[in-house]
Amino acid sequence: MSLARKRFVIIGGGPGGTSCATHAARLGADVTLIEKDIVGGAAHLLDCIPSKAMIATGGAMAEMKRATEMGLAQVDVTLDFKTLRERIEEIEDGLEASVTRLLASQRVQMLEGTGKMLDPNTVEVALNSGGTQTLQADIIVLSTGTRPRIPDWAPVDGQRVLTTRHAYPPPELPEHLIVVGSGVTGVEFVHMFKSFGSDVTLIVSRRQVLPDRDPDAAAILEQSFLDQGVNLFIGARAESIEVNADDVRVICDDGRVATGSHALFAIGSVPNSEDLGMDAAGVEHEWGYVKVDHNNRSNIPNIYAAGDLSGKLPLSSVASSQGRKIAEHALGVHSNRPHRHIDYDKAASAIFTDPEIAEVGLAEAEAFSDGRKIRVTKVPFSTSAKAFINNDIRGFVKIVSDPNTGVVLGGSIVGRHAAELISVIALAVTAHLTVTDLVESLFVHPALAETVGEAAV
Image (cartoon, rainbow, N blue to C red; front, side):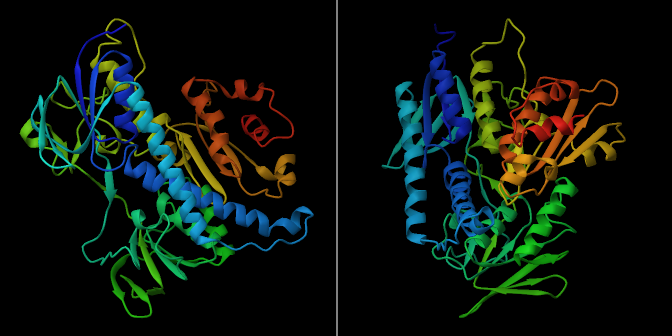
């Protein structure tokens, strides 16, 4: 049954926009979704999904190369770059088609073009086919995402000097890739291309890779890179680049020079908000990101923002949740009953390197810096029978809890399938479970998940 017959205009078809569109339509709203390029989101379908597909291919290659350690005859494997490219395109096309069908099934009107607000209730659409169309809206949702940040001095050409959008996959397999940026995206690229057989140099501007993550986790990944032969420029900040006939050279502020065949920049992103008409609509923003409240609503009551544009956690899972919450709030679903706002501090995240790294909730370093008393327990995977069976005992499970109540506050996992295993701790954090709840759970044996229970003791 329809709660309200409101007209939604959503600018941007990423996870936040499409989630809001389908949910609002199910609740009875008239919904128009404007997307100029890719339904499903460029960051999602051109960054997130292809990168994980490439990492999966690299992981399969690594498993085959370790065959002798598992009692099998050695199997030689080589990368078929053309087949990999075709596989990624098939995944992208399949996901976009699936999202498009879902929107159509909910009678969401889709317009191919670029939307711009003329005032708080009017959106002008520059159609890809030519001409313009003007829409009146009760609710406007901005979900245009971000794009890779490029420093002014970087001659990005999409051939030898790349951003993330050029590298899933790149035009050719780099012989030697220089990665500028040691955050989540940067280290995933290091892992990805090293597994494909490229030489890799990583420029790390801080004192460790993953500077904002658990130091114990970062140390294991850093050692893994060194063991694989990755060149690490620790404490070096890239400041210029030379593109020559035979090589690419990245010059750092301490005088060191990284020389390779290709360079890739993974140094953050900037919002796609220049042409949204935010000033015309009176929407407050900072550095191009919409300033939103706990309902993802801007200072203009009928205008919301979802996804990266909201300035919150840049995760597809977060964007999708925001989209649903926006639809429910705008349509008054929760006006007469309590509901749970998004708690960004409890969002689980993962880094798909080898080994994988996953985190959720309160971090140990954060708690100590705030002077908060916590209990930290840590168990290595070397205690797990399943880890030995998998021939991979790297990593650990760490749980952060309240020393008085035992409530699980957070945790981190480094090791095989960490992105899956963190869900157990994420559920505990969200549901306010205690370490006793985890200890008394009867996990499968042998399984890596047993280590989560052991780490709670």
